[in-house]
Length: 245
Ligand SMILES: [Zn+2]
Image (cartoon, rainbow, N blue to C red):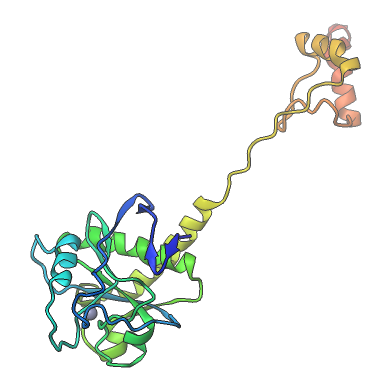
């Protein structure tokens, strides 16, 4: 469960992956900071940046986005950039970004954009899976989309190009389950109840002589004894004598 204030994730990391905030200033280009509130979010749209340069990491893209001049471009913003080392949030998730290429359509107007960097793509993709999963845990009604769903553009091109989109979505589902299981508090083993004060002496003797042995669930001092357990106690006490005859 992520902690989010005014659309900005405040957690320092997601499952150990550093999460940085480089929120584009509100007075930046209106093509980047649209100022349009995203009141109803239906999910996440995944992209590849389209830039395989080794220096085109998440920080570089965030820096580039902050410097964008007012230009009329179909695609100009994203809420997150993810590379092999970190996740960088650049826009509040409750503000529309132009990323899906569908104008005022549902892609732009109601989904959060994740741009997956292409240098060291496998590691970047693994981090993107974690970010998708963390958002899904926080917002269970969200759906996972790809850029292609909105405008037909072949994006995220690395995932689509290798026919891995179904596997990518499945990996997000598996990660949701794993993170949720890890978040469950582990049951703390209860210490076995001590023998009753009146029986302490007898228990001490029985354990010292080997007459009383623990069971799989512990010493079980207060548990009722079955007939065969009673016979086993008697046998341990007297059995050797009879067996010798
Ligand atoms: Zn895209």
